[in-house]
Image (cartoon, rainbow, N blue to C red):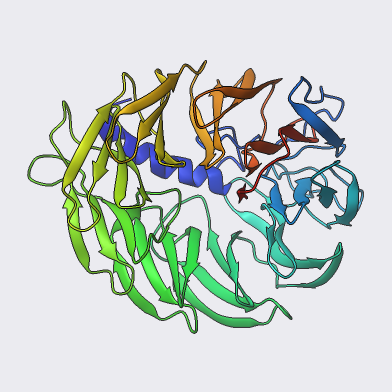
Amino acid sequence: MKRRELLATVSAATVSSAGCVSGGGTGILGESSGRRTDAEGAAPSGDAVDWTYRTGGSVRHRPTLRDGIVYVGGGENGNATSQRKHVRPERSENVYALSADTGSEQWRYEASAGVASSPIVSDGVFVVVGWNAGTHGIDQRLVRLDDGAEMWSTRSRDRFRHLLAVRDGTAYLGTSDDEFGLQGEELSAVHTGDGDQRWAIEAGDTTAATVDGETLYAVEGSRRTTAYAVSDGAKRWQKAMRPATDGPRVFDDTLYLVAERTNEHGNYPVVAVAAADGTERWRFSVPVDEPFVPTGAVVSGATVCITEYGGWLFGVDPSDGTERWRYSTDGETRDAPMIGDGLVYVVSRNDGVHAVDVTTGERQWKQPVAGQARFVAGNRQGLIVRGGRDEGDQQLRAYAPDGTERWSFSHAGAFTRPAVDGTRALIGTKTGYVAAVGEPDGRDAVG
């Protein structure tokens, strides 16, 4: 793949991950397919597998881990079947609450349609329920669950509905269809207590957002970042740039975005903007063999760590964007870097995973990874990396901060992007299993 093609690929992956085209798919985020599969498929197995739970259907969305409970949608029930051709799933699905320690079922909610999102847990369990017609959603609505009982639901829409965030008594929702654009969709906020709408505004196709303080930062049409007031949806600022992170993220008081237009040197700079008003602070791009195409930016302490498609990792001063150090791999770097304890991890599609000192830019260790290596999570306890191909065997490997392999796992089939607790991964499989893989000693839960 050429560097200039990567920007279009990122946008297409956003559409796929939102379910707008494929309803899942094993694409860039590694989500499993939306098609119904044989519930008799093989269960995850191996020395690293702690427990498995069988749903009897398929698990298509990433599990959520909160306070020792795994929340996940999948399986099937007899409440309803899709009435139109090419609509997925074929049968209505469930939401499960499982013990993270043992996998035992705590409760189950039997929905009246498919489960269309990963749950968000925040003073209740919130999930989107509805059908997927490929180009648009059918009868999609937000549901709040308490101990497996439905407390309320929003009105249904024949659009894809995206649960963006839940914070301080408010749930934020975006809509989209298969034609990602900058207008004609809805961004809304509802009270978590009763589901009543607080406000709704017209927006572009919105599939990712985050709340920081009194502001909702949303990505529209995959290429525009907009800041909205959480109180009423008023627009605070807008930039025709996509985040340099996996969805918008605020680091202290700054967002890092990627310019959609090249500069005079043909490069796509990383742009640091003030979270409060969108004021541009600096731009960063450097000459490389081909146009500079950034693939990620994260902050560790006093360093902004930026990956570039051609295998580069840069350490940049967050105050003015000046380069402090650079590190080169021998392959493509399509993932944003991950931050550990004094380390920044970078994964190369063809050159394994590298651990680099975040202060000096010097390599601390390197490990090979079979197949197309992708990051899953990194934290103070180490790193989890995914390998393999979209079809066929998929692998997960966990490494300690010193590069020692802690465990490895292989599965002959697709599985979801994991929820992570330390160096333990919780996955759902295309064949309908939920599995805990690795060591249950985590302290840094993700998802």
